[in-house]
Length: 559
Ligand code: DON
Image (cartoon, rainbow, N blue to C red; front, side, top):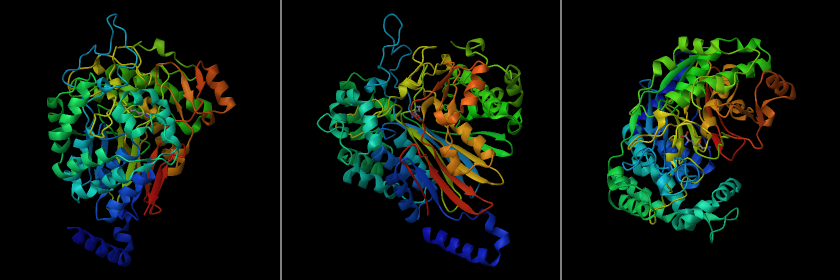
């Protein structure tokens, strides 16, 4: 099969040579991969070189990131994989989001007085949802890949066994979660050295994780969700006061969902569907902004309107969005042009509207981890995937003998309507905890497509993900490149808290003054945020470029 495809490609190259004007438009000149870790980018290219397609590469990258970037995503977590298959122009989102355990209860993180118990939904196995990543990569490989799952998992298995080197980012994240990691002896044994943050260059080997990956490679999803690994996970979780059962693992189901589509200035946007809030919020944002000629406005005015749009889209996120298998989401209303016109009617050009005056629910966000990667292969197949275990090092809990670091995705539910979660996000009924429900996410893997080209993009950053993707889309609409999309300074508003957060380079002194005069509350951030990964297929110039966010230590390679 591989030989046949290579032969076809060879013939195609010959034909392109003879008839350059007929069929060259859609021939991808190279494969591009951007991920948050050089070893994961290499794993992807290794699998492409072995005859794999973008989907096989996505399996290899997801598994590799689970090994070499353990603070961000992993087998104990979940994510969304947005796929485009070129041969039949087919787009789909694989929803491998975690699910609440069957014993989860609406008030499980509240004390007797009905107040949120700090930390309970962030640290330890009670904060962990049932992982979706293992099921998702098995499905991705079997249904869309060209190689066997075993082949695609080999780079990750090797990396787990041979180890990876601690870098500065690892140290920072380990420091942030040090106390929590020390609480789980199995986690501390892997990720700390003598209970301390390991020095730069220390090799972290994960032999148990290698065995778990091998079982997955051999037995498919059953290798994780049933049998030995499942037993160890449940035993470890229950011994540490968690509530997982064997039935929770055995009944985990991923879902294939239709992505959310929208259009802005001739750019077709394909993005994440609920239980991500990304696609719907981006559509609302872009629908509002379509009503203005942004190019004709001065920078302050432009940023004011963008911020007012953010405020409104995040208000709707808080009220209406949740797991579509549990709540009825008014998607067609929220994504309609008419609805956006209604929202715009309350935007004043000269004044910020206090969030308290917008009807809705009654905050600082931080983007510490999670990971995104983008891939385009030489056939034009593409994957944008944002994967997470939520907080840095997730729940910081490893079930002994599994090597699997569990997520703390339960914190993405609204533990108590109106009370902010770790990202300062407030939620309502739609995102309340229920058994088997998926928590609402902001992860927004996205494709852009117009006459100029195709962009595969996304980023971690908790509640700020959606506004980062928005700013990148606006930049692309203005003619931006892969590099400018990942580099451009960022600003963010999420309805509550009623604060406009910004990287220092995002606003000039004059813009700060102009926005303050309009009534915005501004807060300059002490550090930058986001870790965007972009691959851009420039159809006009027949070039693939890839860029990894300069704020972090990823790698973008075109080959
Ligand atoms: O699904 C979500 O929206 C969050 N669990 C993502 C967390 C995240 O991006 C952390 N950030 N840097």
